[in-house]
Image 1 (cartoon, rainbow, N blue to C red):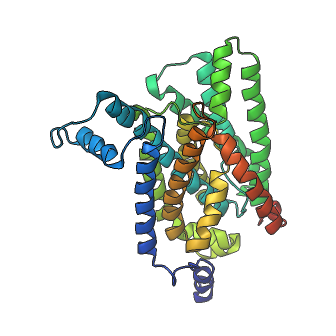
Image 2 (cartoon, rainbow, N blue to C red):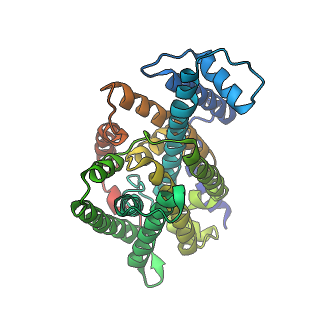
Image 3 (cartoon, rainbow, N blue to C red):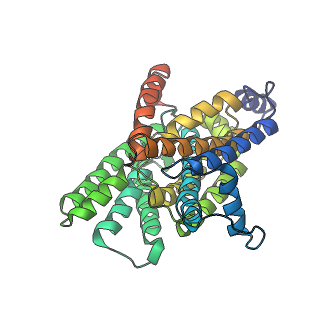
Amino acid sequence: MSQATTTSVQATTQPLAASRLGFGALLAVLAGALLLSITLAVMVGPVPLAPDLVWRVALHQLAPGLIEPDWEAFQENIIWEIRFPRVLLGAVVGGGLAVVGATMQALVRNPLADPYLLGVSSGASLGAVAVILLGITWFGVFSLSIAAFLGALLAFICVYALARQGGRLTTGRLILSGVAVSYVLAALTNFLIYNARDGNQVRSVLFWMLGGLGSARWEFLGLPAVALIAGTLALTVQSRSLNALSVGEETAVTLGVDTNRFRKQIFALTSLLTGTLVAVSGGIGFVGLMLPHIVRLLVGADHRRLLPVAALSGAIFLIWVDVLARVIVAPEELPIGIITALLGAPFFIWLMRRTSGALGGGR
């Protein structure tokens, strides 16, 4: 690796706002904002709740006997059994989708990339919808998550096989293969829905496909949370290679990155993370597209900083989107995917015009 190449990568990934706001301070601010967002989001609802009550109930649940309960049983049920799991699940899903989006944009060197563009979300949706409509419960409460992961893995294998040419993967073929596979899997999903006999199941599936956190339970939180933490750490460890790949294929090879092997490993990891998240939240689009671009304005393109900040920002973003979904048409609630689409589509158009030729991408 030449000194000039190393300098070029470092210059390209230099944080834009590093001199204005220390990275540690930024993380602390975002962590505080996340804690505040969780508190306010748990308070919002038909039954008003005080902020101190929210955390006293939480502390009582985490350390029984530390605080003597002086609240009504229904308040504890609302806070601990209904709102806390929902808000925390929103944080996990939002953070995870933002991390996956940032990684995929580096992986294919395309600013418009997100889990949907490469077919991964469509594969996860097909697996989840098949489980719901066919009533498969082979793995208990994890049936949906496992099916979504297998669907995402199927999409990954198809995209990888189609994109591979002459033993190499190219960005353009990866994107085009992803779009094609996404359409095919979406068609299979629609075929399953079209042939479903139970109207209630169809309504459940359609609501799930639009995205939502209404089914959040504590038992559904563990797996996505572990996947988010482990996935973000693993991807952050690979920041140097992601930075090099962001600069260019030749630069990555010069720095000693086996680009074919690296793409395959990262694609598999993001497929696993996406499948786990989609299984518990349904199809929530545009989070993985928007948040990485917004975060880059704060910390630059260095993935050592980008990924953790994207995780925190995505968590905060989806918590508030869920709050909007709950209050806009209260007492009913909107599917989250409708709101993220209304926010994300204009962002997508702006980004597409700003980065003309992006779909052509790098080589």
